[in-house]
Image (cartoon, rainbow, N blue to C red):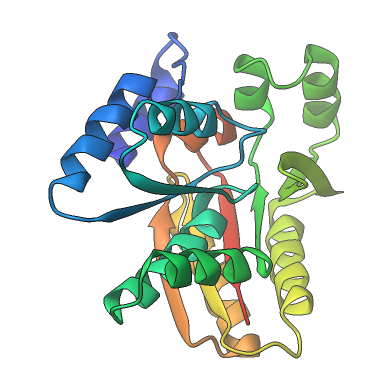
Length: 238
């Protein structure tokens, strides 16, 4: 199903989805397939603190000692990790080798970030990420939590009382984070909330004048915990 169909079902289905990382066998098969056309493989994954994906990638590498594989743990997620991958891809497109591509990824990784605001804590609670008391308190106070990824884990980045204030918090935080930096790239993120994500991206773009901007719908793996209505923005700079 598409991401949009997933969010529609998430709103109405009593069965809550579960998520899991790719298996070691899946990574091994992927490495073997890629190696038929390429001499080197660069693997860029979301934070090892948030997923077992890194562990699967490393274990599969150990099964294929003859392949030249390098793995980078971005210690972040979503399009913050995506910008790291794109930095490496630009080097690869320019004909650079594995070492240069990996170095570009590491440098980009030092200057990326992501913020997400949730419409509700219901889905974090249903997924076992927070307790019921916190969920009930946030609901009673109409709190809109704002989350980021720092030191490889999801952390609180603020709490406001209304959706409008939450969106403004995203805009203000991002423009401050990239102030004075060059080659800024922005990505709007949303879980079935394109209009709000477009607003945040447009407002940030007016201030920071990015060299690249794009919009993406959060994948179901992230969206299962964010829930419909989640809005975020990721950024990268030199």
